[in-house]
Length: 309
Ligand code: GRG
Image (cartoon, rainbow, N blue to C red):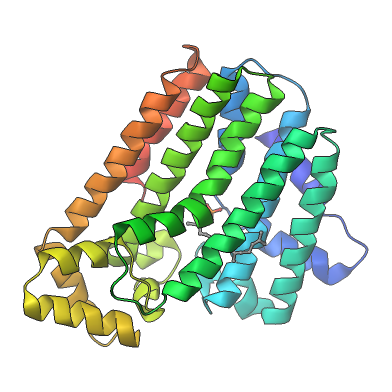
C-alpha cells in the first residue's frame, strides 16, 4: 500500500496547478483505499507479484476518487471524510473537471498494463457505475422502489468497482476462469454489503465518526433499504410518514423516520441483508488457495459489518 501511495502521488502530476491542488485535497484526505486493498489481496492470494499490481491499484483508486468528486456535485454534499467536500471548497466546475482529469489519467495508466482484458474490465465497470447513477437519479422520490430495484442500483454504482478490483487481481495472475469468477463474486458481494451498511449508517451513524452528514439520503429522496423495509414492516401511519418523506425529500421529520426504521426492525433487517452478502463473499473467497491473503479477505468480509466510517 505504501508503493500504491507512491504511484498515486507520482501520477497526480499535472502542469496545471489547480488540478494538483484539487486532486491532492481529495486523494490525501484519508480515504480507506479499500479498492486497492482488494486488488492487492487477490493478487497476493493468487501469487502475483508483478509491479502492475501497484499501477492497477492506483487506477481503481483514481476511478473511485473521480466518482466521489462527481457524486458530491450531483448530491450537493458538503462534508466528506470529515472535511468540506471539494465542491464546497473549490466549487462545482473545478470538482467535475478534476474528476474528469483523474478518470482520464486512470485510462492512461491502465494502458500500461498492455492487456485488452484489463481495459475491457475497467471500461465496462466505469460504464456500469455511470449507468447505476443515472438509474438512481430516475428512482429519486419514488417510494414504490422495491428491494430488487434498490439492489440493481447498488450493484452498479458501488459493487461494480469492488468486483472489477477483485477480478483484476485474478486476471493479472492469469488464473483459471473459475478462480476469476470466485474473485469477481467476492468483490461483488463485498461491495454490496459495503453499500448496504453505508445506507444503514445514514440513519444509524455518527456524523463526526462518519465524516459526512446524516440524513443526506432522505434529503435527496433516496429510497434505500432501511426505508423500503420500514414501509414493508410499519403500520399504515408509519408507511405514510416514510412515503411522504421520500416523495418530498423533506428532513423535517428525520427524527420520526429514524424512530420508525428502528422500531419496525427495518434497520436490523437491513444489517441482516448485509450479513447475507458478507457470507456470500466469504463463500466465494473459500474457493481461493488457503494463505494469509485469502484469510485477510475472509476477515475483511466478516469485519465489514461493523464498519462505522
Ligand atoms: C466518473 C466513472 C465516473 C462516473 C461518475 C457520480 C458517479 C458517476 C458515480 C458515483 C458512484 C458512487 C460515489 C457510489 C457510492 C460509493 C461509496 C459508498 C463511496 C464511499 O466509498 P468509501 O467509503 O470512501 O470507500 P473512502 O472515503 O474510504 O475512499
